[in-house]
Image (cartoon, rainbow, N blue to C red):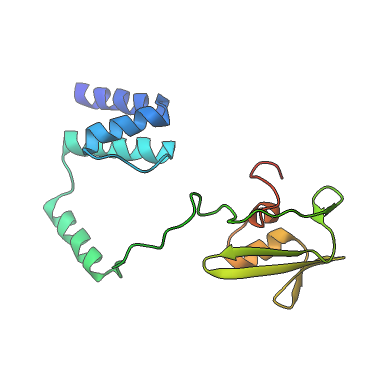
Length: 164
């Protein structure tokens, strides 16, 4: 019981650590540095490792099954291409005249590179034209392009995250 309480205390301590402290603890526990700066990911990963070291890792059967699954997976044979520091941040700087607080002037053409594709949007009086279709907002265009919800102004580099 005391080992379980000790482990719970250690996990509790992890939650209160800074990212810098977690990175040091990761090095201690895994024997290698991490590239992650995500606090939640780090404390959860370290907590898992501490538990695995204290109570035992995967069973041999589970390890064999994981290996089977990995063998069947389409694994990457080459490293991904180099990307900018933040994969979601726009890769260019744009200066745009605004009409009102957040709407670029009609006639403005917004250009953004996304996953090797050039995205070009024309600002219209009522909407945004992309690939011959008119969308009500830049966020709708960004969602069409990425498949997930984005702040359209941020996606096209018209504001920093949190400004919109």
